[in-house]
Length: 189
Image (cartoon, rainbow, N blue to C red; front, side):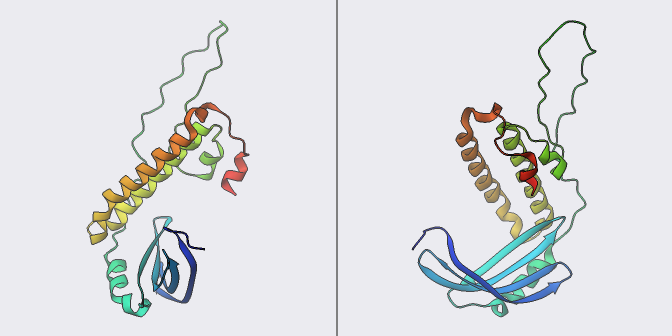
């Protein structure tokens, strides 16, 4: 069954360690009705994983070793903080003796830890957390590839993620205030 735009029958073999935090594999897959051979590299970058694929109809990892090594050697790890700018929460008013509606809190994550993810309670919170994860990923990507030829792909990647996220927000529509129908612990498992 042909599925345009998706990888089918992906296999990997002959894994090789490229450095203390990088690994490479030969791989083969079908894409849009054609078979390809190529290579994949996975690099651990500041708590995340970056994966690069290079392929053509008849290449292997050995053909791409020099290109992958150049990418690996050009990585610059930055200790830059990945938190995006967020307004500081405003102080709460002093308690009043008058009856009022329960205070509504705004979900404003400052990190992407399990505890923060577990605190999601509505679909709107889920979308806010998803945006935080995307932003953090893009900052890590930018830090890892600043000064390399891969840095030029960042604006295109930002646009693609932005468009995909906007589409996801449309799918949720007016559901943002509804409680999630799954348990918090299942989001992290």
